[in-house]
Image 1: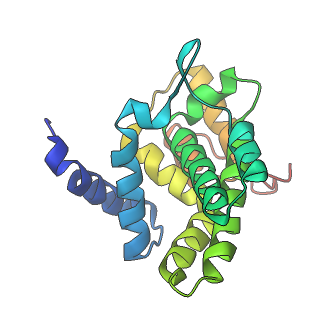
Image 2: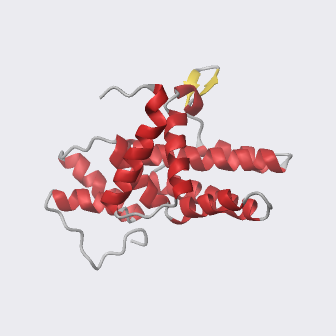
Image 3: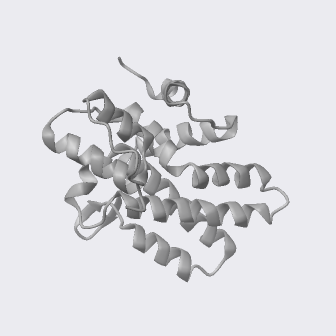
Length: 200
C-alpha cells in the first residue's frame, strides 16, 4: 500500500486506533494524536538521527538526559525531556527485537522514557496552559509498555524463529509486555503464571 506524506498522519492515526482496539488498550484522543504525530515526525530520518563527525547516528538516551541536566532554561529542559521520552518510545516500539544485540536492553528504554514523560507531566501540570500536555504525558508514562506494544504491532513484522521466540519471552519477562505474551501464546508458549515479569 502506497501512503503519501499528505496522508501519513491519518494513516498512522487509523493504525494506532486499530492496534489500541486489538490490544484493548485505552488512550485519550489527545494521546492518539500525539502518537500519530510522533510516528510521522520520525519517518524523516534526520529527525531521529543526529549528524556528527562520524555521520548520522542515534544519540544515546543518556546524552539526552545530560542535555536535560545541563539545560539553562525551563524550555530547554522540557524539550530535552520530550526528546528523551519520544526517542525511547519510538525505538522500544519499533526496534525492541534488535535491542538484545546491544549492551543496553529494553527495560532501560522503558525506564528512561517513562521517567521522562512522568517528569514532563509534572512540569506541564504546573503551567496554566499545560493541562492537556500534562494528561498526555501522564498517559504515556503510566502506560509506556502498552503504547510500546501498540507501536510494535503497527510497524514490526514478527517472525517465529527460535531466537525470536526467546526474545519475546525475554521482553515479556523484563517489561510485562502484553503483546509479547500474546506472541508467545500464538506459538503455543504460555509463561508460568507464578512468575512475576519485571520483578523476576
